Length: 108
Image (cartoon, rainbow, N blue to C red):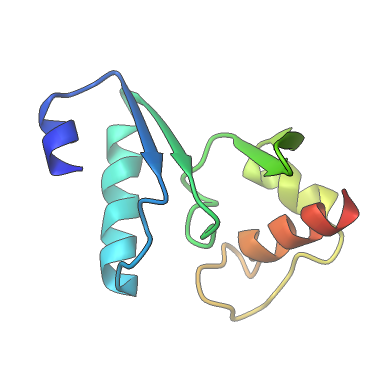
């Protein structure tokens, strides 16, 4: 990742960048990617969503290779009636993006 960022690409594509990271390193990487995405496009594939809600501009949710949702995190929260998990780690205003994601998958 460091080597890729040194090249300052306009588009950065990452596959499971949070796999194997300790929670504090995951938070630091999310902050780094959020800063980088202010001036560049960052695309990432991950199933670890908590902590991304306030940074992601758009989410595509795939199920069996088919796009079942293309929306902002706020829209994903709004479309999932019971996405609230007060006190859960990585929530934004008591809402868990991971819980909302699971609900969207279950409904598809």
